[in-house]
Length: 194
View: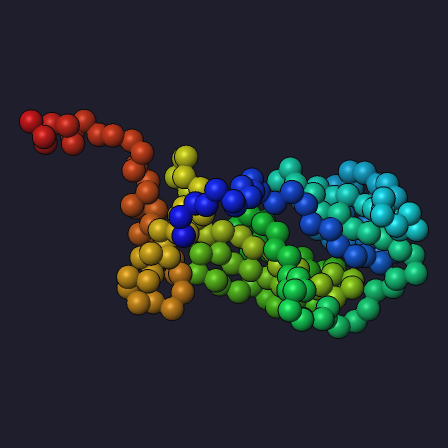
């Protein structure tokens, strides 16, 4: 699809706002379990009966939660219906991901165990109101000046050309080899043209 003059050019995710339970329950999960600093609070400007808590997930964006003391934690999953959020994924380092199962076990939080997704590892668990949370760790570091999205785009092209079902380590490795020095000219190439 070619760029169109009527598109709205987004520049990244600004924030995600969730409907939470009580204030302390919210703090205990987002700051207490996930370690996101609680950076400010104000009333929900559209519903002053609720407070609005803001957390820093670590990438200069925001996770915000509308809190209401009448809402309690509940067992089970949030409804999976068209238009609903299926899950939120937060990035962690590979060094952290290796220890997530034992960390969640020590906190008494049920989880999926680590899952290998080819280009990343993931673990899933639920927040107090049933929303599925994923902690994901990329298995690669992109070359300088190359975005992860570009590496995954190239890995996808390689996967499709190979007729493979999903991106695996080899597709990422081949994409990294292709992109590693693609923006740096070589004198060897100039000498070969003489």
